[in-house]
Length: 431
Image 1 (cartoon, one colour):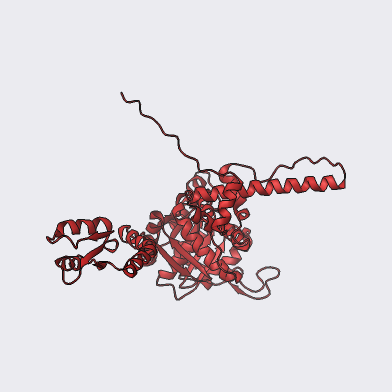
Image 2 (tube, rainbow, N blue to C red):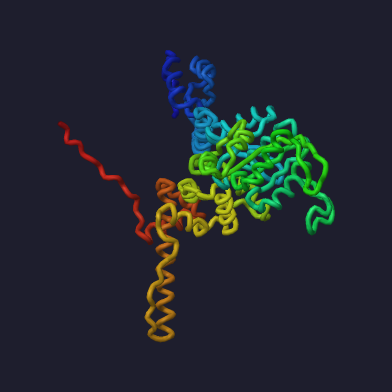
């Protein structure tokens, strides 16, 4: 706004301050008379730096117009950043190109608990659905603990039968069984002074639960085939997606073992309960996967992100990572999320086959071309409509999301007769 104060001898600083607060100091331009003016002093004290001299020159006006046309987006971004409090967000790398990300209140509380538990050497039980990142939390606990200089080891209790699981945990001596040519240390021995993650402990057999309980009580164990007893100073972290309370009620899990491994319990919520983290997770996945595939990071359109946030993700982070890999490989093509979108909308993913009447070679080819062309037009029309709705019918934003020119978008809108859906006005009858 340009305010002409050249013909206002008496100053009204209160009005100027009110305008500065309402419009923003960068949006006010004062037209001042030549020479010194008391208005200039007040403006500088209010941090208003935009001045024009009266009579104004054409070059001065052109400069103002150029600055006004270029500045709003950047200034608006700065204003919103200043007005909006920063959102809690934490990203931390862990070994093997993995990371922990917290951008929701529930995950920020988990991160705070991790920092507290890392300093206290007690067993921790991590609960959560498959794919929520239980092993990531265990790794982070180890990283922040006093045991971090030593080994972090893990074993999947559901992947091995009881006999193999016992030898995996406690090791064996040469000749302990057929094929045991030489001695092998177990996970407890390898993780001495470090951390051992017992993943999927809810799937462990009853005999192995009893043996594990004995080891956890006094830290003593024996290799298979050994006559001596070994000790290990190991912090045990257990994880499972099994409902432990139900397993105890069904006599599938020992209650005394549960109390031994659960001095503290961390419940990791599924991804559908922390959807606000999906944009942060997708950004990290795209960044890391593009580097892994030696490709440029793919652009995630607003429509794609909307679909990703609406889906319920039964496979949690593992399923989301696979979806982002698909998007990265297919270069952001809308087909890369067609199956997810169909599940969100409750529609089948397969297109019903159209019957084709064969009336000769040429007629058959022409008919097939017509089917393909109609399908292409319908698909293109639907994608453009979705992009426009996602951009709230801002055509320039929609064109950028679709990666087509603005002129092409206008042509397509006219070609497919696309129209913005207007909500009907409701007339009040009073009374």
